[in-house]
Image (cartoon, rainbow, N blue to C red):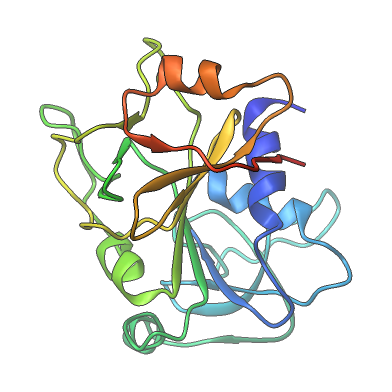
Length: 217
């Protein structure tokens, strides 16, 4: 299991029976492969679908009219429905989405999220991210802990253009899980082989260390 699969498997454990979940483009869509078969989770996409099942498996028919927010083909489960993007954003802005799961360029210790643009590089636009992080009941960020240069993506204060201020509830990396609370950023879980010291060494933030830290499954 590589880092992204590990992150997706842990993130999928947040979801409960009956949850309505929005998965962002890229790594977040991998969560669908790790849902507990004993729970019933509904996946929503801002382009107007509830009931996505993800990329069709080999041999399954592909309907080019059924795509996720990134334009990739998706299956639909029995009971699914399609509707306008206006209705979709009504669900989102109305607070009916239980979880939104997004990627990130950076998250800072205040829970500020930057995930749509790096200055000087081409950007397609923010999309629905701003609405999702303010409308969903819980925002989870999935990201590898460090970028390709070795710099942590969880920082003291991001200087990138923001998607939302103080909107992040959890960050899941291949090394740990951070929980953002009123008191600050709590190191809630550690991946096998990681320690408090190893996380502090690569994360230049004020981290709250609780008495008990769980192990990431």
